[in-house]
Length: 252
Image (tube, rainbow, N blue to C red; front, side):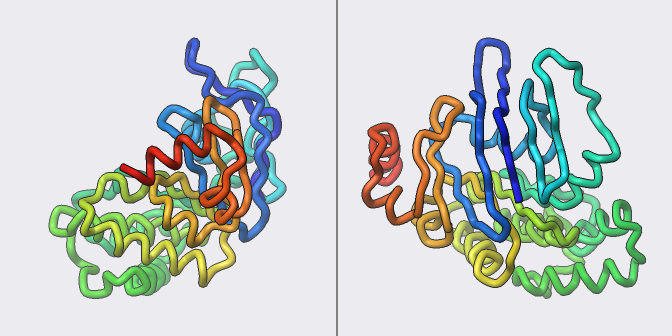
């Protein structure tokens, strides 16, 4: 479903991804862990075309998203990129909701504007999704009236409204107060167990990653230093860097 082939990315002297070869199967749930600056979020941003690779090929569901030869100038947006990106939904650390729109209007906006859906159909889809994430009683509330956890659940419903084949989650609990984290993780857990979407999660919630993932990938210095089933990675990692990272995170 997702393929990175020999993907390179640098910002000046900072080599963020180093000839990355990384593949995710259809319906697979993959968690990406690792220290800050290891390239985790860059992977998601390249998939969302928020960043371009310096070199390499990226495909999603068999369609080419990026094909870059080193030194070639990037044209920022192509029809192919737009069509491929429609298959991908992303939930960010910050909720990025429209503050002047209600919860249901936030969820309706993209299906109407991007998919050309009628307002009635978009309203029904948005209402059903907000019910699913436990916000059926808050349809008309604007973001400033919602808690951080509620706003993040609106953001998840908004991403789901486009019916993506791939869902990306970028540290979605990092901006939340600790008591609000559980509700958001419950929603993601339900998605993981009840849908066949491919899911890619960048997370520091290690126990959650161990619970819901089919595979965990440890990144450090722009490369995948270790990957495997969650029980193996969390309980008996082979790589010393993985052991040190997990020891630091789990004891924190």
